[in-house]
Length: 239
Image (cartoon, rainbow, N blue to C red; front, side, top):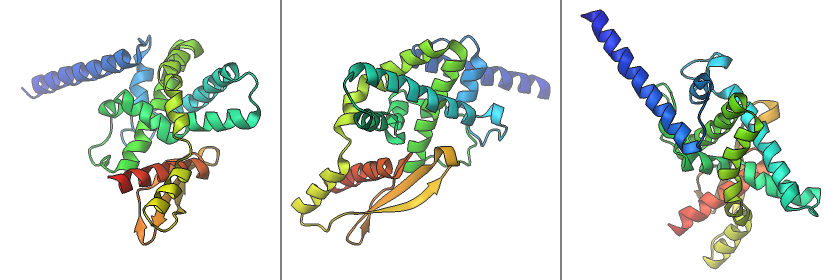
């Protein structure tokens, strides 16, 4: 009876896993030849600390692939644009907060494999995980199908929403204007945490206005994190 129960549970566990992977494939419109890449892309470190069994290596790869694809598309769209313009526009498209939006667009957090004791309820944690999963997914697609397959997904997500990212770049300026309009003190931007390896640091910045603190923004550099924090502060003030 015990073995039979284990067999039944194993069958339904496998069925649930395959159904979840199929849903991801439908969302990104890509069918994997080797599903082990896809399975790894959604395996949190809490499931396995072994580098080849969680998504962190794929996240690292996906980050580089997104950079390459976005950089190439920017050079095509702005043939006369100088390095400064291209860098500014790329930063808006590859920042953690925007990639998190792409991850949320695909509902990637619904499919993460994670230990029950890991809390994803805090906004900044969920935000970071959604971005991580998006990067890992791109890395997995690249390994499975090559650069053109990864490019298709990046173009249908990040690139197709580029105007949204570019319109929202100067949140700091908007926040300062909002504070003046509402007769509030000027905002202060405070770095609350810096984490991650040297080649891929993650900055957390809080906005302080008067005696009030607002939710932390995150980004791959201080400026991006400040912009995200300013956006969150604007949302909080306008609620």
